[in-house]
Structure formats: C-alpha cells, structure tokens
Length: 335
Image (tube, rainbow, N blue to C red):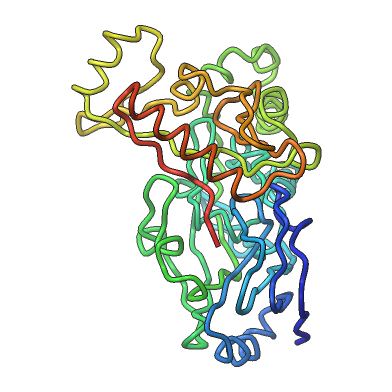
C-alpha cells in the first residue's frame, strides 16, 4: 500500500477548504486491511475520510489519513420479505440509492441526493424526508484499526441517535467502515409524510419508487446548492430539540415557528427557520455565508477559510441563543 506524502485535500472536501495531509493511504479493498493497521500503528493520529461532504478540515492535517475509495454493490441475501443489499464503503451514496431504485430494490429513495459515501452514512445516521438510515439498515461491517479485527454491527450495536452513532463518538482512527448492508422491503410503501413530497404534483399521477426518487432530487436541487458549483458541507447545524414548554413559549412569541413533536414531551425545531428569522440568510462573514435559499447551509463564496467558518458559526450560535434561548450544535465533523 502506497503512502502519499503532502496529500492535498482541497478538492476532496465539499466545502472546498484548503488542506494538506502529512500522509495518506488510499483504501480500495478488504485485502489491504491488515497492512493498513500495521501502517496506522506508526502514527500518533489517524483519520478516515470518505467523500468529504460532512467535514471541516484544517489547513494542515497531521498523522495518517485513510482515504476510502472502495467500490462494489451486490445482493448479499434474499429473504421472503427483504432484499439485503451490501455496498462497499467508498461507493457514492446518491449513486448507490439510484442503483437500488433502478434494480427494483426500493426503500432508500427518500434519501436521494445526500452527498457523501455509503461508509459515512451510518456514522452520521443520515436522514431526509421522513426516512432515517437506521430504519433501513441491516448491518455494518467495520474494521477496528488498532486491533486489526473486523466486527459486524447490528442497528442496535450502532447506538444510533439523531445524526449520531457509536462510530461518530469513537476516537478518530478507531473504526474503518468497510461494508454497509441494507434491508430493503419487497412490500414497498411510499413515505410521503413531509409536506414537500405530499404536495409534489408528479406524485399525484405516478407513485413509484422511481417517481419518489425523482421528486426528492427535484426538491433538493431547487433548495440546496450543488457543492460542485458552490462549496458547502450540507446542513451546518442540527435541528435543536427543546421541551414542550419551551416550544410553546416560542410559538406564543413567534406564531410561524417551525417545529414538530418527537415524543417524550419534546419538539424538534427547524434550525433553518431560527437562522433565517435572526437575519443570517445570505449574510456574509468573510468569504462564507448561509445560503440565500436555505439558511441551514453554510456556503463558501470563494476562498473561504476555517477561520471564516468559525467566525460565522459562532456569531449565529450566539445570536440564536440570545433571541430564542436555543443552542445550536454544529453538524459537520472537525478533523
């Protein structure tokens, strides 16, 4: 396995932050895992990078970076009720979703056009338009880098929470997810709980997995900036969770407040609404700004730095807390 020195990650993170890694090992197949662990033991810091879509990188990354580039999709198992589909960690998430829909394996169509790789999807427990990854997951195969040993995780083992998992909470360099398996139902039922999908005109005439996939793509493209054209790391803040009492107090003061109940007398608020109401939509700080059409997405206006990102994030968090008494939590992972 070749180690690349002074490896540029400028084009390998969707926010477009300039970053150079001291050393990089490109992971392509499970045959490399033993060697990869042996190499990792020589470094005091180890990081794993997939598609670079949910990360904020420093100008200089010390230690070893493992860049996941493995490819492959297969029918792992078939039961009376489900197709179990396995994908290599380096597969593009959106391309994987499109492939499963085209092959007649439905269930992931609501998660179309989410950037990143398959291997990163359980780390963040991605979700969109009424479907969370943990609802479709069968198992995760992950390599424990220090132990040089493979483990298979059930959904319960993954300790999923909102945009969180055991992989995200573990120390950097502990886990390298190698394959992810999904249980996709043979008895397909569309998930149209989100208003955007319920109101989609095309779904009134044709309700198929492909139609839902196409609708999700159209909706996301209309709302969200393409990272290939404007650098961004997707949703920059998590939607905050507050008590029912706090929600009601805010709703009394701000009748258009966006939020919905999630059980245990708690409500999830729309972080984008809070940021927009506070006046940050489209307002630049340095060379970054929250997007003019979607206040939840921070964008790189060109030449943005990590310092710009931190300055805008801190200003927004402070302002939102002072206005609404709500603390925002950053979603992208910092290396």
